[in-house]
Length: 399
Image 1 (cartoon, rainbow, N blue to C red):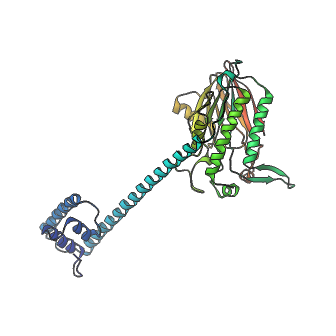
Image 2: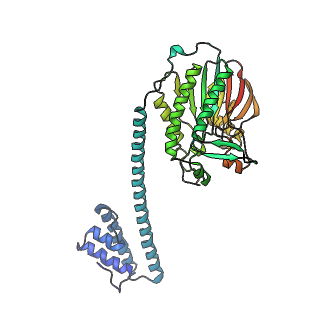
Image 3: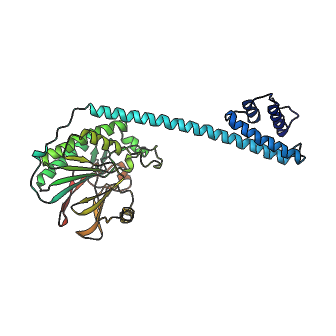
Protein backbone atom coordinates (compact mmCIF):
# COMPACT_ATOMS: atom_id res chain seq x y z
CA UNK A 1 0.00 0.00 0.00
CA UNK A 2 2.56 2.54 -1.03
CA UNK A 3 1.43 6.03 -2.00
CA UNK A 4 1.61 6.76 -5.72
CA UNK A 5 3.34 9.89 -6.95
CA UNK A 6 0.17 10.98 -8.68
CA UNK A 7 -1.92 10.68 -5.50
CA UNK A 8 -2.55 13.39 -2.98
CA UNK A 9 -2.76 12.29 0.62
CA UNK A 10 -6.56 12.15 0.70
CA UNK A 11 -6.71 9.99 -2.43
CA UNK A 12 -4.13 7.67 -0.97
CA UNK A 13 -6.00 7.37 2.34
CA UNK A 14 -9.22 6.67 0.49
CA UNK A 15 -7.54 3.88 -1.46
CA UNK A 16 -6.05 2.40 1.74
CA UNK A 17 -9.46 2.59 3.39
CA UNK A 18 -11.07 0.82 0.45
CA UNK A 19 -8.45 -1.93 0.65
CA UNK A 20 -9.47 -2.45 4.28
CA UNK A 21 -13.15 -2.64 3.32
CA UNK A 22 -12.27 -5.23 0.70
CA UNK A 23 -10.33 -7.24 3.34
CA UNK A 24 -7.09 -6.92 1.38
CA UNK A 25 -5.27 -5.55 4.44
CA UNK A 26 -5.84 -5.83 8.20
CA UNK A 27 -6.39 -3.01 10.73
CA UNK A 28 -2.75 -2.78 11.75
CA UNK A 29 -1.63 -2.48 8.10
CA UNK A 30 -4.36 0.10 7.51
CA UNK A 31 -3.20 2.28 10.42
CA UNK A 32 0.48 1.89 9.59
CA UNK A 33 -0.16 2.89 5.94
CA UNK A 34 -2.10 6.03 6.89
CA UNK A 35 0.07 7.47 9.71
CA UNK A 36 3.27 5.42 9.47
CA UNK A 37 2.84 3.49 12.70
CA UNK A 38 0.36 1.28 14.52
CA UNK A 39 -0.77 2.94 17.74
CA UNK A 40 -3.73 0.91 18.99
CA UNK A 41 -5.23 -2.54 19.17
CA UNK A 42 -7.52 -4.00 16.52
CA UNK A 43 -10.72 -3.03 18.29
CA UNK A 44 -9.68 0.61 18.62
CA UNK A 45 -8.57 0.68 14.99
CA UNK A 46 -11.87 -0.87 13.91
CA UNK A 47 -13.67 2.04 15.50
CA UNK A 48 -11.31 4.48 13.83
CA UNK A 49 -12.07 2.88 10.46
CA UNK A 50 -15.80 3.48 11.00
CA UNK A 51 -14.99 7.16 11.40
CA UNK A 52 -13.04 7.11 8.12
CA UNK A 53 -15.87 5.38 6.31
CA UNK A 54 -18.29 8.06 7.46
CA UNK A 55 -15.74 10.72 6.58
CA UNK A 56 -15.37 9.54 2.98
CA UNK A 57 -19.11 9.10 2.59
CA UNK A 58 -19.59 12.77 3.50
CA UNK A 59 -16.87 13.78 1.05
CA UNK A 60 -18.61 11.86 -1.75
CA UNK A 61 -21.97 13.39 -0.87
CA UNK A 62 -20.35 16.84 -0.97
CA UNK A 63 -18.87 16.04 -4.35
CA UNK A 64 -15.32 16.43 -3.15
CA UNK A 65 -12.87 14.17 -4.91
CA UNK A 66 -9.72 16.20 -4.77
CA UNK A 67 -8.29 18.62 -2.27
CA UNK A 68 -7.37 22.21 -3.04
CA UNK A 69 -4.10 23.57 -1.68
CA UNK A 70 -5.69 25.00 1.48
CA UNK A 71 -7.45 21.74 2.29
CA UNK A 72 -4.27 19.79 1.64
CA UNK A 73 -2.40 21.98 4.11
CA UNK A 74 -5.11 21.34 6.70
CA UNK A 75 -4.80 17.61 6.16
CA UNK A 76 -1.05 17.83 6.49
CA UNK A 77 -1.52 19.67 9.78
CA UNK A 78 -3.83 16.92 10.98
CA UNK A 79 -1.19 14.38 10.08
CA UNK A 80 1.47 16.44 11.87
CA UNK A 81 -0.74 16.72 14.95
CA UNK A 82 -1.19 12.95 14.96
CA UNK A 83 2.58 12.51 14.85
CA UNK A 84 2.99 14.93 17.77
CA UNK A 85 0.39 13.05 19.81
CA UNK A 86 2.16 9.82 19.02
CA UNK A 87 5.46 11.27 20.31
CA UNK A 88 3.69 12.54 23.45
CA UNK A 89 2.37 9.05 24.14
CA UNK A 90 5.84 7.59 23.71
CA UNK A 91 7.34 10.23 26.03
CA UNK A 92 4.69 9.60 28.68
CA UNK A 93 5.40 5.88 28.50
CA UNK A 94 9.11 6.53 28.95
CA UNK A 95 8.45 8.83 31.91
CA UNK A 96 6.15 6.26 33.51
CA UNK A 97 8.76 3.54 33.10
CA UNK A 98 11.42 5.85 34.57
CA UNK A 99 9.14 6.60 37.53
CA UNK A 100 8.66 2.88 38.19
CA UNK A 101 12.42 2.32 37.99
CA UNK A 102 13.04 5.23 40.39
CA UNK A 103 10.43 3.97 42.85
CA UNK A 104 11.87 0.46 42.84
CA UNK A 105 15.41 1.80 43.35
CA UNK A 106 14.20 4.10 46.12
CA UNK A 107 12.42 1.25 47.92
CA UNK A 108 15.50 -0.94 47.57
CA UNK A 109 17.69 1.91 48.86
CA UNK A 110 15.42 2.36 51.90
CA UNK A 111 15.44 -1.38 52.57
CA UNK A 112 19.25 -1.40 52.46
CA UNK A 113 19.42 1.55 54.88
CA UNK A 114 17.03 -0.15 57.31
CA UNK A 115 19.04 -3.38 57.07
CA UNK A 116 22.32 -1.54 57.67
CA UNK A 117 20.91 0.31 60.69
CA UNK A 118 19.48 -2.86 62.20
CA UNK A 119 22.90 -4.50 61.88
CA UNK A 120 24.56 -1.76 63.92
CA UNK A 121 25.39 -2.39 67.57
CA UNK A 122 22.43 -1.29 69.71
CA UNK A 123 22.81 1.96 71.61
CA UNK A 124 22.57 1.89 75.40
CA UNK A 125 20.24 4.28 77.19
CA UNK A 126 19.50 4.88 80.87
CA UNK A 127 16.47 2.94 82.08
CA UNK A 128 13.52 4.69 83.63
CA UNK A 129 14.67 3.93 87.17
CA UNK A 130 17.69 6.16 86.64
CA UNK A 131 15.78 9.13 85.27
CA UNK A 132 16.03 12.23 87.47
CA UNK A 133 13.00 12.19 89.76
CA UNK A 134 13.27 15.84 90.89
CA UNK A 135 10.09 17.65 89.79
CA UNK A 136 10.28 21.30 88.80
CA UNK A 137 7.21 21.58 86.53
CA UNK A 138 9.48 22.93 83.81
CA UNK A 139 10.81 21.78 80.43
CA UNK A 140 14.08 22.68 78.72
CA UNK A 141 14.15 23.53 75.02
CA UNK A 142 17.41 23.16 73.08
CA UNK A 143 17.34 24.48 69.51
CA UNK A 144 20.02 23.54 66.98
CA UNK A 145 20.13 24.78 63.41
CA UNK A 146 22.28 25.03 60.31
CA UNK A 147 24.87 22.31 60.91
CA UNK A 148 25.72 22.21 57.18
CA UNK A 149 27.42 18.88 57.83
CA UNK A 150 29.78 17.98 55.02
CA UNK A 151 31.12 21.53 54.67
CA UNK A 152 34.86 21.95 54.87
CA UNK A 153 36.23 25.49 54.75
CA UNK A 154 38.40 28.08 56.43
CA UNK A 155 37.56 31.79 56.71
CA UNK A 156 40.46 34.16 57.26
CA UNK A 157 40.35 37.71 58.53
CA UNK A 158 42.01 40.98 57.59
CA UNK A 159 45.40 39.93 58.99
CA UNK A 160 45.24 36.38 57.67
CA UNK A 161 44.02 35.10 61.05
CA UNK A 162 41.52 32.22 61.06
CA UNK A 163 38.05 33.63 61.74
CA UNK A 164 36.23 30.32 61.41
CA UNK A 165 37.36 26.84 60.46
CA UNK A 166 34.80 24.13 59.92
CA UNK A 167 34.57 20.45 59.08
CA UNK A 168 32.72 17.39 60.40
CA UNK A 169 35.08 16.89 63.36
CA UNK A 170 34.75 20.55 64.38
CA UNK A 171 30.95 20.20 64.19
CA UNK A 172 31.16 17.24 66.59
CA UNK A 173 33.48 19.08 68.99
CA UNK A 174 31.09 22.05 69.11
CA UNK A 175 28.17 19.81 70.03
CA UNK A 176 30.22 18.17 72.80
CA UNK A 177 31.19 21.63 74.03
CA UNK A 178 27.50 22.59 74.00
CA UNK A 179 26.64 19.62 76.21
CA UNK A 180 29.41 20.56 78.64
CA UNK A 181 28.09 24.13 78.91
CA UNK A 182 24.54 22.90 79.52
CA UNK A 183 25.84 20.65 82.31
CA UNK A 184 27.87 23.51 83.83
CA UNK A 185 24.75 25.66 84.15
CA UNK A 186 23.27 22.87 86.27
CA UNK A 187 19.66 24.02 85.87
CA UNK A 188 16.72 21.91 87.02
CA UNK A 189 14.01 20.77 84.59
CA UNK A 190 11.92 17.62 84.23
CA UNK A 191 12.43 16.89 80.55
CA UNK A 192 13.87 18.34 77.36
CA UNK A 193 12.75 19.05 73.81
CA UNK A 194 15.59 19.10 71.26
CA UNK A 195 14.51 20.95 68.12
CA UNK A 196 16.63 20.52 64.98
CA UNK A 197 15.61 23.47 62.82
CA UNK A 198 16.94 22.46 59.41
CA UNK A 199 19.98 22.63 57.14
CA UNK A 200 21.56 19.56 58.66
CA UNK A 201 23.61 19.19 55.46
CA UNK A 202 25.43 21.40 53.01
CA UNK A 203 23.97 19.58 49.98
CA UNK A 204 24.48 20.95 46.47
CA UNK A 205 22.47 24.14 45.96
CA UNK A 206 25.11 26.25 44.27
CA UNK A 207 28.67 26.05 42.91
CA UNK A 208 30.08 27.25 46.24
CA UNK A 209 28.53 24.15 47.87
CA UNK A 210 30.59 21.90 45.61
CA UNK A 211 33.74 23.72 46.70
CA UNK A 212 33.01 22.95 50.37
CA UNK A 213 32.10 19.26 50.02
CA UNK A 214 34.71 16.56 50.53
CA UNK A 215 32.51 13.45 50.27
CA UNK A 216 29.20 12.35 48.73
CA UNK A 217 26.23 13.93 50.51
CA UNK A 218 24.58 10.57 51.26
CA UNK A 219 27.72 9.45 53.14
CA UNK A 220 27.45 12.58 55.26
CA UNK A 221 23.77 11.82 55.93
CA UNK A 222 24.71 8.44 57.44
CA UNK A 223 27.65 9.84 59.46
CA UNK A 224 25.60 12.75 60.77
CA UNK A 225 22.62 10.57 61.73
CA UNK A 226 24.80 8.06 63.62
CA UNK A 227 26.66 10.83 65.44
CA UNK A 228 23.41 12.57 66.46
CA UNK A 229 21.98 9.29 67.78
CA UNK A 230 25.05 8.82 69.99
CA UNK A 231 25.08 12.49 71.02
CA UNK A 232 21.42 12.40 72.08
CA UNK A 233 22.11 9.25 74.12
CA UNK A 234 24.96 11.07 75.85
CA UNK A 235 22.75 14.10 76.56
CA UNK A 236 20.29 11.80 78.32
CA UNK A 237 22.99 9.94 80.21
CA UNK A 238 24.37 13.23 81.53
CA UNK A 239 21.06 14.95 82.33
CA UNK A 240 18.97 11.85 83.21
CA UNK A 241 15.72 13.21 81.80
CA UNK A 242 13.25 12.17 79.07
CA UNK A 243 14.00 13.72 75.68
CA UNK A 244 11.70 14.53 72.75
CA UNK A 245 13.29 15.15 69.31
CA UNK A 246 11.61 17.50 66.81
CA UNK A 247 13.22 17.72 63.36
CA UNK A 248 12.49 20.27 60.62
CA UNK A 249 13.87 20.15 57.08
CA UNK A 250 15.83 23.06 55.62
CA UNK A 251 16.42 24.40 52.12
CA UNK A 252 19.93 22.89 51.99
CA UNK A 253 18.46 19.50 52.90
CA UNK A 254 16.22 19.44 49.83
CA UNK A 255 17.15 17.12 46.98
CA UNK A 256 17.37 19.21 43.82
CA UNK A 257 19.70 19.70 40.84
CA UNK A 258 22.49 22.25 41.08
CA UNK A 259 21.28 25.88 40.90
CA UNK A 260 17.66 24.84 40.31
CA UNK A 261 14.60 25.84 42.28
CA UNK A 262 13.06 23.38 44.68
CA UNK A 263 10.40 21.47 42.72
CA UNK A 264 9.69 18.53 45.04
CA UNK A 265 9.35 19.89 48.57
CA UNK A 266 8.82 16.44 50.04
CA UNK A 267 12.22 15.20 48.84
CA UNK A 268 14.27 16.18 51.89
CA UNK A 269 17.35 14.41 53.27
CA UNK A 270 16.31 15.21 56.84
CA UNK A 271 13.62 12.53 56.46
CA UNK A 272 16.45 10.01 56.45
CA UNK A 273 17.83 11.49 59.66
CA UNK A 274 14.45 11.13 61.37
CA UNK A 275 13.99 7.52 60.24
CA UNK A 276 17.59 6.73 61.20
CA UNK A 277 17.08 8.15 64.70
CA UNK A 278 13.81 6.27 65.11
CA UNK A 279 15.49 2.97 64.27
CA UNK A 280 18.63 3.59 66.31
CA UNK A 281 16.78 4.88 69.37
CA UNK A 282 13.79 2.54 69.22
CA UNK A 283 14.91 0.67 72.37
CA UNK A 284 15.46 3.88 74.34
CA UNK A 285 12.22 4.14 76.27
CA UNK A 286 12.80 7.71 77.42
CA UNK A 287 13.66 9.17 74.02
CA UNK A 288 10.83 10.01 71.62
CA UNK A 289 11.50 10.98 68.00
CA UNK A 290 8.65 12.88 66.32
CA UNK A 291 7.80 12.28 62.67
CA UNK A 292 9.49 14.48 60.06
CA UNK A 293 7.64 17.67 59.22
CA UNK A 294 8.36 20.90 57.38
CA UNK A 295 6.65 22.92 60.14
CA UNK A 296 5.87 21.73 63.68
CA UNK A 297 3.73 23.26 66.42
CA UNK A 298 4.36 21.89 69.92
CA UNK A 299 2.90 22.92 73.24
CA UNK A 300 5.62 23.18 75.89
CA UNK A 301 4.27 23.98 79.37
CA UNK A 302 1.17 25.73 77.93
CA UNK A 303 3.22 27.73 75.39
CA UNK A 304 2.50 26.98 71.73
CA UNK A 305 5.81 27.06 69.86
CA UNK A 306 6.09 26.79 66.09
CA UNK A 307 9.33 25.42 64.65
CA UNK A 308 10.40 25.96 61.04
CA UNK A 309 13.59 26.54 59.13
CA UNK A 310 12.84 30.20 58.45
CA UNK A 311 13.45 30.93 54.77
CA UNK A 312 10.68 33.54 54.87
CA UNK A 313 12.07 36.93 55.84
CA UNK A 314 8.77 38.03 57.37
CA UNK A 315 8.21 35.41 60.08
CA UNK A 316 5.36 37.39 61.63
CA UNK A 317 3.34 36.85 58.43
CA UNK A 318 4.37 33.18 58.51
CA UNK A 319 3.16 32.93 62.12
CA UNK A 320 -0.22 34.47 61.22
CA UNK A 321 -0.59 32.21 58.20
CA UNK A 322 -0.08 29.00 60.16
CA UNK A 323 -2.30 30.24 62.99
CA UNK A 324 -5.12 30.51 60.46
CA UNK A 325 -4.18 27.28 58.69
CA UNK A 326 -4.02 25.15 61.86
CA UNK A 327 -6.59 27.17 63.83
CA UNK A 328 -4.18 27.51 66.78
CA UNK A 329 -2.56 30.34 68.68
CA UNK A 330 1.21 30.52 68.17
CA UNK A 331 2.97 32.16 71.11
CA UNK A 332 6.47 31.89 69.67
CA UNK A 333 8.05 30.97 66.38
CA UNK A 334 11.59 29.57 66.41
CA UNK A 335 13.60 29.34 63.19
CA UNK A 336 17.15 29.25 61.88
CA UNK A 337 18.39 29.90 58.33
CA UNK A 338 20.01 33.32 58.90
CA UNK A 339 22.94 31.86 60.90
CA UNK A 340 22.60 34.53 63.58
CA UNK A 341 20.56 34.69 66.82
CA UNK A 342 17.96 37.40 67.35
CA UNK A 343 14.64 37.86 69.15
CA UNK A 344 11.78 40.12 68.10
CA UNK A 345 8.58 40.86 70.05
CA UNK A 346 5.48 41.04 67.84
CA UNK A 347 2.63 40.98 70.35
CA UNK A 348 1.35 39.79 73.69
CA UNK A 349 0.51 36.21 74.70
CA UNK A 350 -1.02 34.72 77.84
CA UNK A 351 2.41 34.04 79.41
CA UNK A 352 4.32 37.08 78.19
CA UNK A 353 5.48 38.46 74.86
CA UNK A 354 4.63 36.90 71.51
CA UNK A 355 8.10 36.39 70.07
CA UNK A 356 10.03 35.53 66.94
CA UNK A 357 13.31 33.82 67.83
CA UNK A 358 16.06 33.21 65.32
CA UNK A 359 18.54 30.47 66.22
CA UNK A 360 22.23 30.80 65.43
CA UNK A 361 24.12 28.21 63.41
CA UNK A 362 26.40 25.37 64.45
CA UNK A 363 28.69 26.05 61.48
CA UNK A 364 29.15 29.81 61.98
CA UNK A 365 30.30 32.15 59.23
CA UNK A 366 30.96 30.43 55.90
CA UNK A 367 32.10 31.68 52.47
CA UNK A 368 28.52 32.49 51.41
CA UNK A 369 27.84 34.50 54.58
CA UNK A 370 31.09 36.38 54.02
CA UNK A 371 30.05 37.11 50.43
CA UNK A 372 26.76 38.70 51.51
CA UNK A 373 28.50 40.48 54.42
CA UNK A 374 26.75 38.56 57.21
CA UNK A 375 28.63 37.09 60.15
CA UNK A 376 27.89 35.59 63.56
CA UNK A 377 29.62 33.19 65.92
CA UNK A 378 28.43 29.57 65.97
CA UNK A 379 25.78 29.12 68.64
CA UNK A 380 22.74 27.19 69.91
CA UNK A 381 19.63 28.43 71.71
CA UNK A 382 18.42 27.17 75.09
CA UNK A 383 15.28 28.10 77.06
CA UNK A 384 13.28 26.88 80.04
CA UNK A 385 9.48 26.93 80.16
CA UNK A 386 7.58 26.84 83.43
CA UNK A 387 4.09 25.37 83.86
CA UNK A 388 2.63 28.60 85.25
CA UNK A 389 4.91 31.33 83.91
CA UNK A 390 5.84 30.36 80.36
CA UNK A 391 9.42 31.05 79.29
CA UNK A 392 11.41 31.95 82.40
CA UNK A 393 15.03 31.72 81.20
CA UNK A 394 16.90 31.65 77.91
CA UNK A 395 20.38 32.10 76.55
CA UNK A 396 22.54 31.58 73.49
CA UNK A 397 25.41 29.15 73.95
CA UNK A 398 28.31 30.39 71.82
CA UNK A 399 30.51 27.55 70.60
